[in-house]
Image 1: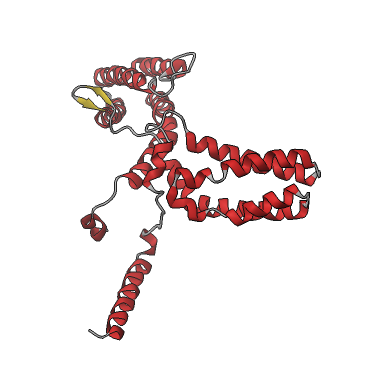
Image 2: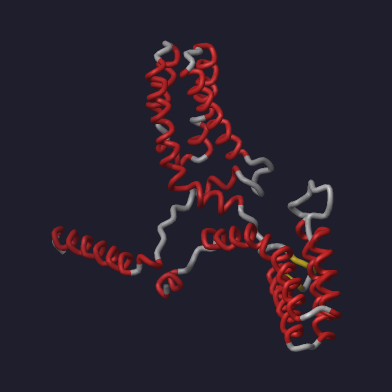
Length: 285
């Protein structure tokens, strides 16, 4: 095959793939996944959030350099530039794949301008470093935070025969069973379903303590949810259908929606990044 034919076929392939992506742009989102080497600096592979702590140091040091440079405080500029020049290269040491993304020229200019008190050049070098940071954050911050800081419930077991997922599905069914029985005037079924729901909520609360360890009181279900369950039970016995619906709606918000708004959304998105799709699934989409 002649080289011109080969190059033409390659270009044609790129055009076809690009066309397919464009035609499906309403269903395609481009996300950059961080290198696997980053995982060693996050829990659970590391006891401390080493990567995050280094990021916090860089942010604080850049702010300090800016502050003292604006005030022409040579002593403190030198102090904070020294710290910044120590922690900035650690990005490439911890994640070698990102070493080439570092703007070491800007860091060198920052050190030189700081040592000679050229504050305008200090500010310019800081701007370049900030642009370097922002470029990487734009590509990786959201996916990194989701992959390494969002909750993972896949390994949690309620007991030897019940996974976390199955237990959550059962709680959802119990909430709906209370609603169905309430609307159809089946008081006994509604009350028994509420009792099962209460037990399930308390069992779920035991798993919350795995992460929420420093709470003075039990974080879930908590006094407000328990009081709402009691109120719902009383309403199912003597209240109107409207009262029952209101109490059940309040319980669903307190016991389900509030936690889901934080934890389930993050967990579901994490699965998209961590659980890689097969070629068959990609083609199907």
